Image (cartoon, rainbow, N blue to C red):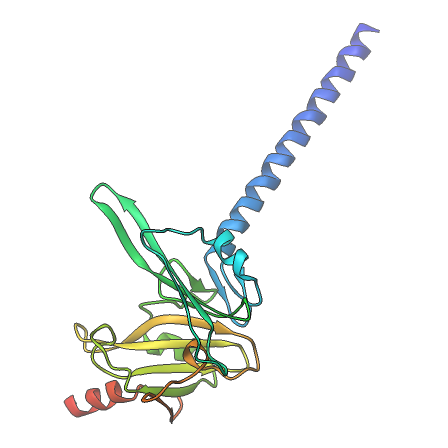
Length: 231
């Protein structure tokens, strides 16, 4: 009888241990998957845990406000333009203060997210494309991208060249290229997502004097011309 009881207790102990290990493994895998999801840009769907179509309150639930760093601007341009822009600063606290990694630009219309741009390396596509990627890397992984130049968008942050976008309306993704004066060629500055099948325009619209110029596929506009001139 004692031997039977001992075996029963042993079996129960083993079962409980198996259940505990199983739960531990489940939560470990769930945490790993969640960590992966937080950093992934999904074309036409999401950047991390923020999705297209999410309401304004959800934006601040996913990316809590940083009053000393973030910006929240409302617009009244009308038409297809964004009615609100939320800029969430991606920064890491260090001994010296904060190290800024980039930004998230979140555009809303009628209180819902319709376009998101990530300019921080914290977020990348599943193919590993993100800020700092080479044009050749984008071209190798994404077929049939249309190319556009936002005329009169040149600024020091864009390398004093007009900004170029490679866009897939079918997938709902756009790659923004800035000219890097240090390396003397263009690199991905940001990755935007928008609803599949919809027209892509930065912030939802183009305002004068800027113009949206259609370029040959995979063209880099002025930056490409400058490169050709040097060769």
